[in-house]
Image (tube, rainbow, N blue to C red; front, side, top):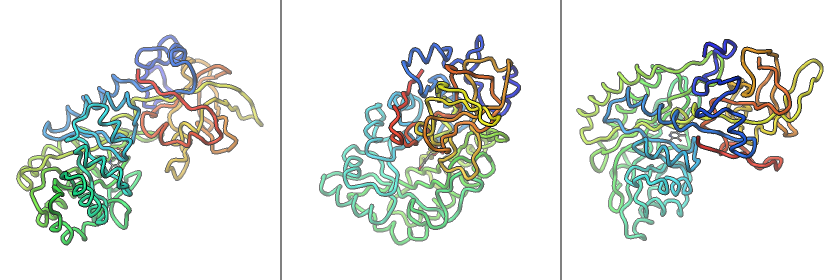
Length: 411
Ligand SMILES: *Cc1c(COP(=O)(O)O)cnc(C)c1O
């Protein structure tokens, strides 16, 4: 926004200012806080969620299935909304599976990944008819046994630990020794053993997350297809589904920017054509978490105290790492950097100062903004953390220090 020169790095266009107030879904922030009934809270904007999906559809080939990895944000109202927008939902636990089914998602379009699925969860998956992404040879045996007990067939895909890594990915989840998936080298022996009551549907090849480089994403997709083609030679049936992962990142920190979605889209059109030739029966799936929901959410807390310690201004808020671990820098960051933060109840072009935003926990880790350039704020003002729609509340240690939980709303 050009009225916010100090926030050029903050991807905040979705939440415009109106009369010195930040708005969420058109509602001024102080009004929204009153409507929610408490601070701190997370607010997600349903229009922004829909807009992101529309943007993707514009660039991706129509035959690609778009899946939502709901661990990014499992709030039931968000999952309900996404269930109507996307082609499938990827779940990572028995409880997520129930939420996806409650949202009305067709079990045919739900897949279940994750190491260490216990027997109860696997039975849930078989009984509901969802696709299980198998993470180990032991799990494969357990699924066959449970399916026999349930007198049902079990739809499975093999999650492959690829023999390549997603370059410049924020979180590597494939390549080398990993707890995820089955090593590509083990599959020529394992694949031919898959038989009734297991129904082989294809491969899940997910190599990483939070990638902001289009070339790296494209390279991983090319390698995923090539690997699937190699493995298909050993498969007990045709590959009907190929999940080529996701890894689409969003900018969190100064200097980061969005990756070139158009470039990835152009490449995917070519990849779909190639796949039609080499794996003619395969539906291609892209699974995305944070890219779908991350930029549509804010975390809002209220300033409880304002103090100056040896010249440094501290805004002490009622929210902190117990609700938003990732903004505090303690969810996988090596060097702590500030998420985009703003005072949502002050004009951005008014008086400004360097201030730190901290939470109420008795640990120096409870830091939401470290010496940031912010509008001057006082007790009662609302602090907004952007890029908070993914890996927020459910990725945080909510019980630490026994403060009240945050509320979530979909606006
Ligand atoms: C976590 C996860 C995702 C989503 O990752 P994002 O970075 O949120 O897009 C997708 N697929 C699998 C298998 C995952 O574990």
